[in-house]
Length: 316
Image (tube, rainbow, N blue to C red; front, side, top):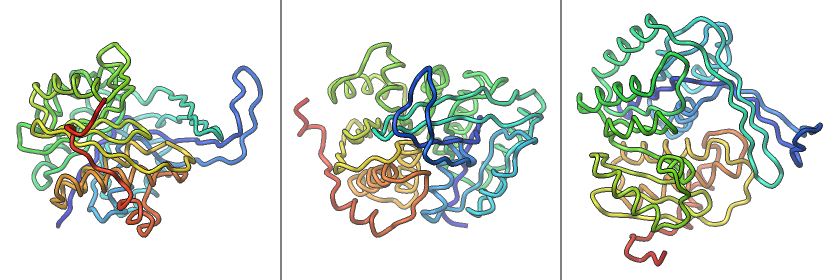
């Protein structure tokens, strides 16, 4: 079966997203509209990849007490469900989206993963390695899964010749970098947190990521919001700049970018075409609520408006 990919979500969530005019901290805020759906970074990536035409297998850890919305989503996107069920309920995360585009995330702790569940997951990974090349590991870690254990899984997949796309933050990102995944996608905030100082210019990005590339990471993709995307591969930098978008919600834009980078590589797009495609997908994502590709004609129109420049033409 062509276009096969595995997405790994170790700490999925049910996202409760509310749209409101302004968040009144410490007081009452009225929500204008809301949405409750199965999510988590890897789950979001799976949804977009499925819309693009991929044959997706999803895995990770899922609470057995409130799995209905996940099961429904996996059925809707024709994904093969290889999640390991664990005792308890998958967490609920609250995302409050203000009219200005500002998003406030309130992320709750996930389920507690025991040794037996970890053993089942490792067996699942081993089985999926038999006939999959691309693995997307995205999101935070649940209780019971350490950053070091996550990095071990990345390293084991890489050693088996798999292309691991890794998108996490904090301790997991730091440990994962040491495992030299095939591609990482930090945003500017995650990169700033990693080095302990604020990134302000494209020059800051190039100097920091050049050091990261020395660990053996083949692709470093840095998302910078409205400023576009920077991509380092084989000592060559490309930068994309999207058109100005009317922002409805930035939730899922980074996950959509990851899906775009994955799909572009799976389709053997050339570098400029690939970055243009992934950036247009991410730009489209901020103009809607929820992840997914609903309008391919608009996507193609956006692709034509994406600027792609080599790093040598940057003046920052």
